[in-house]
Length: 463
Image 1 (cartoon, rainbow, N blue to C red):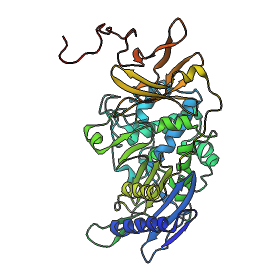
Image 2 (cartoon, rainbow, N blue to C red):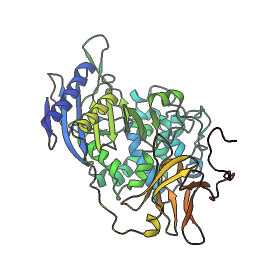
Image 3 (cartoon, rainbow, N blue to C red):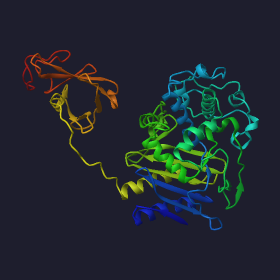
Image 4 (cartoon, helix red, strand yellow):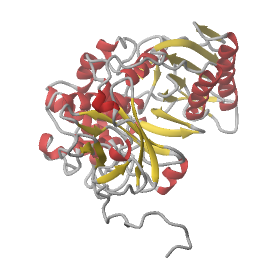
């Protein structure tokens, strides 16, 4: 066992290493290696390997499988941000003749394009990509199994199409574009299409005996954008920090927030499990936490990238076995251990630099019908609407510069908010997407739709 770290308390470091050791032993994995990121920096690294193997460090490559899809999604979002595509564009607009062109780019990113899960022919993960030289070989004669946009159906060929889109619009191979636009700017020098020493060998572990079988490491060819990459815990830790904070050389924070937002209609089973797919990322519920990230697997390897955005903690876990430890649970536990043992310090409160009397006049208690809400003016210049008690709709609003506001999140995303004033300039009520908010429940004289009974509030015995 080896470990290297900084800043975390000794008890936290031991708990992290213990979790990795349990995963390696109970999962019967030749090796498990992990890293934890906090505040945008790697603060812990640990690993555990079988006694006859050398415990890997943060520079040893493992195959990361479908975490490759997150890298491909970043390339597509870059095309969107440059104005070369719109996520609502059908694939046919930019890459004609595939037979799956009715699916939009957003649907392909979210696995709602209706495509098959796998490529036809021999198991593509254990056979050379030369068997599938063209997109037609990857897609087969009937690439669509479902109507586009109607359901979430995970599709590896869908990300092959997105990789082909990148190649078409950039005029260069996917791997070249990836290196130039993502890997080099972020300093991910140990992430590559083919293994570069030192790297771990991939193994299959017999389910009923403690023996190993080497797995082949095939070049996936056209399927590369769906699962080809090799990487390290060191590089993936830096990538995890980027996925939260953004980097204007690659992709800004707003686009990354869009990537982390659920975009696929979940099935009933997914709702029950607390799972949703975004744009190249997944969301999973673990206890009270929502964790964002992606998993990956190829014969001989398992991988998991987990982001606890609210806790500002991320975890990377890699193993070199075809099946074994449940890495989603390990990643979630690593985030939980740090978040609970050393909770994040909140940003210090600070007052507004300037106070606009017209905005301050809006602060306080409002009623939508009989439900009470608080409208607050926050230090970042936003308005925050939230229920006074219990559950209810809540949103933040940003000023438009003309005395109106627009919703940023929640039910009122994109909806207009304006203060309606009386002839004397005082505020009569708030109009929020046609809903009337008043200072008192069904306030007399306010333009409440349907009117307010002029006899006012009464007891049960009054007719």
